[in-house]
Image (cartoon, rainbow, N blue to C red; front, side, top):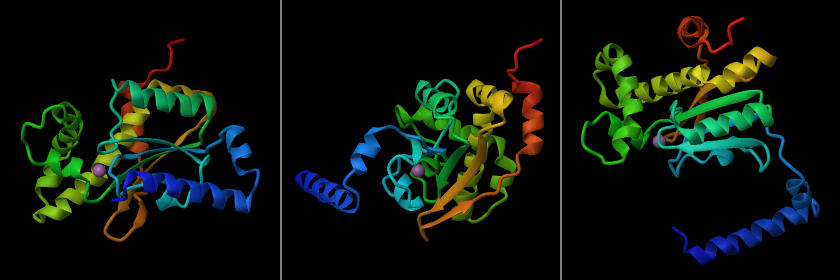
Length: 213
Ligand code: CO
């Protein structure tokens, strides 16, 4: 871990390197953002969003929390999703989980964790929904991995339930929702290629928020 003063030195070097390539770099950056993707990922320090995607400032709108959850009553994630779809008009929302996720491991080991109890309840619910499949996996590490993937899937479905996403869909057919996993053991980003059409149809019967009439 770097001492804090080195962070500012590093920043100065970064500014200089950007200006060397393009003297107007920060003028352009200050002019506004037009990202096409909202990325919802884990707060884990190993899973940086931009770096692993090779993205530059201005390219991706980002929200991170423990275990990349989309919780219905979370004012923070709701505001981020609304801003992304209504104002930035992003065409894609990505939920990106990662293997070796501490939040997922914690959720699979029941214990009193203070403030984390209520947060991890969302993950424990994912476990409960998929308990039969998960309990049939003998290998513990494979079971963790599968819960990471199923959690991404459930959080994608949670996005579908939100009014902001549904309004945008009914208006313009976007955003598309994608589930990815970052494998910290290899550095690879994996598209889970989620096929959610069947779930969407089922969800519609229960969660459709289209105004009547
Ligand atoms: Co994590």
